[in-house]
Structure formats: structure tokens, C-alpha cells
Amino acid sequence: MKILIQRVKNASVTIENKIYSSINKGILAFVGIEKGDSEEDVVKYAKKVVNLRIFPDKNQKMNRSLIDIEGEMLVVSQFTLCGNCKKGTRPSFDNSASPDIANELYEMFISEIKNYGIKTKTGVFGAMMDISLINDGPVTFIL
Image (cartoon, rainbow, N blue to C red; front, side, top):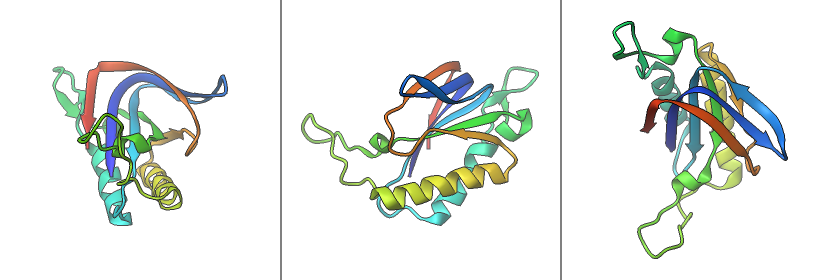
């Protein structure tokens, strides 16, 4: 499982020229599910993301979590995170989970985030999406 998270001032997903979902201050999470990923991985990473102290405190130190700031999360499936670019010039996606397993674990990740009381919005699994964001920092991490 690979997750790229960005601290954002706002972010949105547009599908077929219509805004599908949007959030204000919080985290934009791109989620890639790989072969061998499990429900235990989903639970572990959901807990990690919502508790990761990447928001500034009153002294401008990264010391507050998404839960602490009562922020929002936009979760977008992105199988290209599982791409391997080590050989040649065309990425290999052999390590990506099959769509049925990936969708199941993606949906479970969303449910886990919501279980923490986080206002959560999503993209559409497998859809072509345009993602807009205003990165706050920029602050970006790969899990």
C-alpha cells in the first residue's frame, strides 16, 4: 500500500467537467493498493494518516494532527503509485492489486478514516479525475 498525502488549504475532484467532491483545510490522500496488501495494512495506515502531526501549532511547529485541527480528508484512488519505473521508460503495474481487491481495500480505508470522525470526501474508483488543490506549505509525505 502506498499513500501520498498532501497538507492542503482546499482540494477538489472534478469528473466530466463537474465538481464531484471538495474539502477545505486538511489532507488530500492518494491511495495505491498493491498485491499482498491486507485489511491490517488499511487499519494501520488509516490510523497513521489521521494521527500524523503535520499541521502547525501556535509556534508554527508541525505538532498537530488532522484530528487535532478537525480537518477534512479527500481520498483518491491512484493505482499509478504502484508503478515501477526501474526498468525501461514505460512503468510496470504488475505490483498493483486487481481492481476488485483494490476497490475493496480502498473503500475500507475510507470507512476507517470516517471511524475517526473525519469529514471525508472521495473520488470515484477507476474514473478519470481532475484533481485541484492548494498545497499548504507545501507539505507532502509518502507512506
